[in-house]
Length: 431
Image 1 (tube, rainbow, N blue to C red):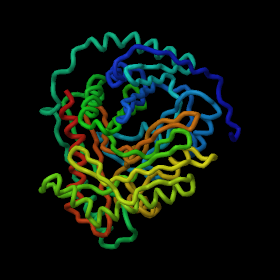
Image 2: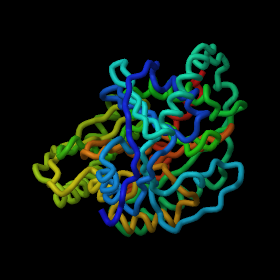
Image 3: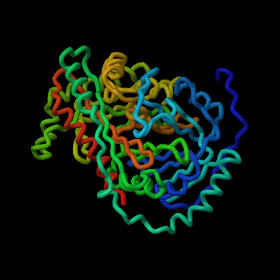
Image 4: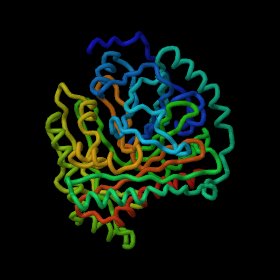
């Protein structure tokens, strides 16, 4: 374990009485850093508070080794999109990624896990016991409060980002004109301002509830480094990697409906026959296959993609399964797969360099990955998409589009608009 010696911390688990953990956020927000996610397949919710053991290392493989040495508990964390050494100066009124580290994995002091109306609390050491006591003491009072009645719809306004569209179109024209490599994913942002703080405990609870209701097939998440810091929220459709022991699953999600003037059926049929989108999708599938060939056996990837339908749009999707080699784990797959061509491009190094050159902002955790793993090789990490960074009254939204030599500027810009619409509506409807 490279000299790593786990501290003598005992993790104790008890059953507790709580409502849905999205409703516990209003109480948890005041207790420090937190990590929340909801699995759409099982309905399982995780809410991690505080940190009892920092496992952050240069790779997730090394972090997993440290967790295995510790031998207990569940670790949660994230990795950013990752452009090492890149720094961007942002205006002070734009939410900043500065409080978030590039890569992070820790065992929460308190981890609540709710499934099938049953909640368990895993307490790591004394800190975990104190957090649970404080949470349960405050929770009844918070739950008795009346729901917020005011809607954000009339109080949420767009703040112009003058360089946003010109930078996106310039990057696209450079790529299409020179076509230096097969694919790159360019992103853009939108900035919204509300009349009330978006990161207040009860407003945050409402945003998560709205995201879950509006996007029931997506993973809802919220991450904050402190009780008064920014909050990263979203509802992502894209799995990066999931493992139960040696059984591994991932997905290629690339290619998006484009013709918003036609019927939904016509747009989906056009997507399934679009040479540009099929090529974009094939690049992602081929990269995942190549990576998993080195890490696993029994690779199962259908030859033809299917449709993944979401609110406002649909994607091409190929589910991929494999069996990990005995000396490999979910951490190895996470290190090797991230970022996939679905959010970066291909080849990876060339795409990253191009993004660093033409995007005038730091992606931070957008297009990064977040999730959980345990000491037994189980876990799940998802790609952070359809997301926003909230701080005080402002929300910074992110969206991207995959570019190939056949890309059209107006079509790609419209695609990012449709992706941003999901978060815009969730924020406006949170009431």
